[in-house]
Amino acid sequence: MGILMMNQILLILRFLFCMIGAAALLGVFSFPDAVIPPSPAMESAEGFTLYALKPAAWLLPVLFMELVSCCGPRRNLVWFSSLFAVLVAALVAYPVLEATRPEITGPTFTYQGGMLSSGLAYYIAFTAVSFLFRKVLLAYAFPSEELHDNLEVGFVSASALDPASARTVQEIAAEKKAAAPRFRFKQGDARMAERFRLIMKRMVFRSRIANAATAVLVAILILWLCCYPQPTAEEALQRDLKAMYAHKMLPNGYALASNRAVHAAARVMKHISDYESLAGMTRAEAEQWLGLDAVPPAYKAWLRDERPIALASANSMHENRTRFLTVTNGRQICVLYIRTSDADGRIIVSELQDAGWDAVADENRRRIGNDWGALYR
Image (cartoon, rainbow, N blue to C red; front, side, top):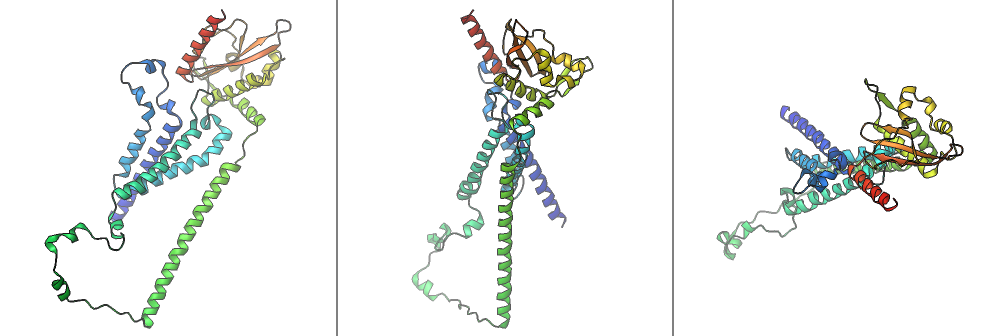
């Protein structure tokens, strides 16, 4: 009893550790830049570097999962149960994240990766390939004893064909034949047959119940993915306007926005830039539209600082535009620039400038900006 319980505990521990590896695999597929951030210096470095292993970073959690699953019996059970557990959890969380934290499910900027949406696609493909490899190819290449016993009738192993153990026809004919049993069903036998029939019927019933339950759960999951309420464009804008001002004040008086706030600010500024939402407004009207009246004065002063700053994605700022709104978490920054009319000071054009999200993209944009500036200078 103690050994059986210990084996069950070890099986549960292996499942949990393998599930951690599966979650790490999904994370690497979804957010590779979080594992090894883009670096212009590393991309241009000569020779072998750790940066060159970035496309193969997903192999690390796979090797960890393989090691955990091989530490005991029922390897495929541990492997696939952990993969499917993480997959189901990710699919359940996906529509909720899409409605509340879209920066996790999709890219905020075009130069970013596909985030969780593409990570799930890679993860599902890996699970399918893993199933074919482990349950088909490996099962065919290394058949188990149960499969060996269930081979077709007429299969003869090589040991039975050894010439040293061959017999003549006379020896085979002289061998004493065992009497073939003849079963005659009596009252007791009929009861045993009925009992066996009931057992088989119960097993078939349980199998059908399990299949029906699986089908119902899959249907519920599909309905959850398809029918979970998603915000409209206006609702998403209002959600981001509320989220973009979350921040913390450091002891030195410096203000930092939360990671969610920076993403929300990027979406709001992109919306303003694409649709010219502030066109024709005065600065005061634009502040009211952005909801800056509800922001604490100390943080509002940081947000509305109009002094020129240097960004990694651009060199000198254009003289005819003004920094109107700045949201940063210390590493990533979003700046909304405006151009105003000389006659009445109303906003004519708004544009978003971001930096700190991808060092390679920042360097490329800075170079393109320099080339365009030199062309029209």
